[in-house]
Length: 241
Image (cartoon, rainbow, N blue to C red; front, side, top):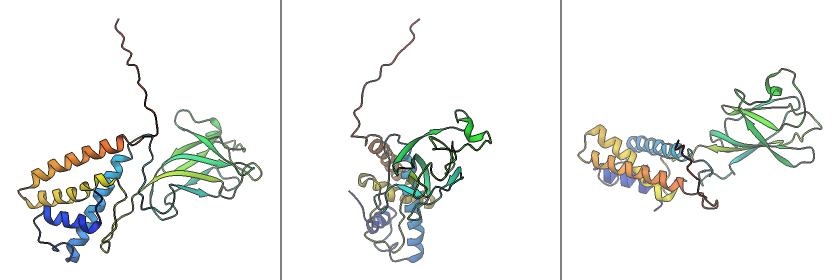
């Protein structure tokens, strides 16, 4: 069941022994628990982003999970901190370069510490159409430096990203978290458990157990969402000598 933000707050009130409205109608408490709910949402995102093979994104974002930026003639490195909505970029997982005909071509990631081509670090500053990139933090370094005529400079880079979730504010009521609706119980269980632990409430251990069950469900849900990929069997080869 997907929970609206006001329902998340009500569940916290119930779990922590508050009277109805004790959080919602108290500005200081509401601010504190809103922060806690957002931190819980971050924890869910951190867990699900470990999943390889399926891109996770908050459905509340209004822009697609990629950004396009201009290439600069003679510039090798490009850095990305925020997307078009101002959301923090957490990771880059695919890069495409627009060729001189205006067609995007996917280029290959390499590791500058091990398998990067010498053109990235040899100082010769070779130019051409980039075919590889090294990722360092939220920046990329192209193997060949693009120059006018070899690439399309306008919106010449398309970078596919993972980004932070959209957050709740104290004024939200009907907003729903962009994570899987079947995992929304974590959003009230984590703040409730921490409050119960800090205040020594009798239900703190049961809340902790519920929290562990919720996290296990998150791992299960997001670990099996690649439904459009046919899974095969892999042989386990053992040396019996």
